[in-house]
Length: 180
Ligand SMILES: CC(C)(COP(=O)(O)OP(=O)(O)OC[C@H]1O[C@@H](n2cnc3c(N)ncnc32)[C@H](O)[C@@H]1OP(=O)(O)O)[C@@H](O)C(=O)NCCC(=O)NCCS
Image (cartoon, rainbow, N blue to C red; front, side):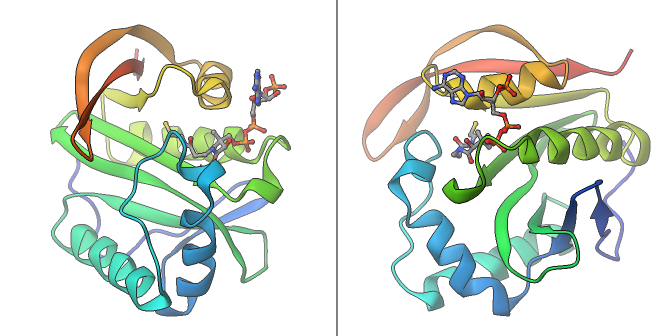
């Protein structure tokens, strides 16, 4: 795998811009992750204030600087409102990246995340030279499974009691796409 670049890469899809998160995205990020529909199968620390959201943005900034992960903000092309986030949460090994993604509920069902994941996969395989891209999905998260299937990912199995969240253990379906 190539290390992450030092300059944050802006990416584009036919309808979306994938941009570096900035402090002025805090209000939109707060709105995104305060919605129980968004966090039902996507566990994040609850954000209560814009300051909390700014801290998360700063956390992502440092993860990128330290080459540990990369998180893009998603906007409709040419617009400033943040409608979601996507990225490689971690690289457990040099050839492997774990993706995460979330979209504001008002924008669901229009193919946006399928489009964003396609670009992330291109970036991961072509630019970062990953050999394997993974997604950890909670079993009832049907729409997440659909976007992965539509991008060629396959479910490899269920990891029992894989994730701990607020004192509870959750099974996780492991989805992956490998570079042939
Ligand atoms: C998962 C998520 C990113 C999908 O984004 P999206 O832009 O709505 O996805 P798309 O429009 O590209 O595709 C959604 C697919 O799921 C399908 N779908 C949605 N709800 C469904 C349901 N309850 N049952 C069956 N299919 C469903 C849609 O029909 C569509 O498939 P289709 O194109 O074959 O019709 C979005 O729902 C989200 O942000 N969820 C909350 C955060 C989250 O769970 N992230 C993933 C963590 S692993």
